[in-house]
Structure formats: structure tokens, C-alpha cells
Length: 118
Image 1: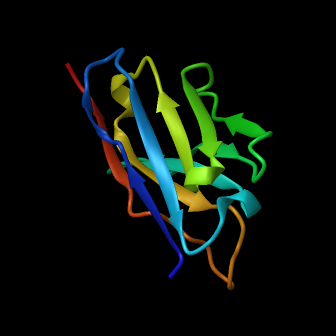
Image 2 (image 1 turned 180 degrees about the vertical axis):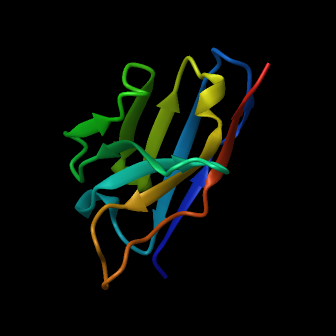
Image 3 (image 1 turned 60 degrees about the vertical axis):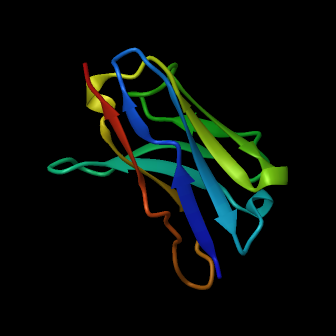
């Protein structure tokens, strides 16, 4: 069964750090680009970051550039999102998504909650 699973969310103070993980089951990430998205109540969905299948190409939203870093460990079939200098407005549910269609559909993880508060 094809599946993406996020982990690593939690509650941190402003200025703190978290590392999110997105682990794939049923397929190899070395053939697919993976994106991170975030959304909360009353907010538009926002693309956060994306990494190519090779890991050589990355992109970031302006709101996180310089603070977040995306990377992959293909041996572990996992993509990471390291989040540094977190702000209160980074509070959202974070989702990973397969950027290409496979079997006619997109695959999303279930999401992991990130809360930034004093």
C-alpha cells in the first residue's frame, strides 16, 4: 500500500527548532519529488518547500527561506524538514505530498501539528 507518514511535530517556544520527517511506504522516494505544505483553521494552504527526487534541487516559500531546510535520506526513504527560528505564525498542521501523480492520484500524509507559543 502506498503511504506517506509525517512525524516530529510538537510544541516549541518562539525561536526554537523542530525537525519533521516524511517517510514513504510502498514506493521509493528516489523516483519522486516531495513537497511540504501547511494549513490551519482559517488559513489558505501554503506550499512550504519541495525537494527533487535526486535531492539536488530544492525550493522554499519566501516566508520560510533562510529558516527551514529540506533534505532527504533515500536509504531511509525519508524526507526531512528542519525548522529553525520558529515564529508564532508558523503554527499549522504540516503535510507532505508526492508532487507527481501516481496511479492517477496525489498522495498526502495525515499531517503533523506544529505549535509555536510562549
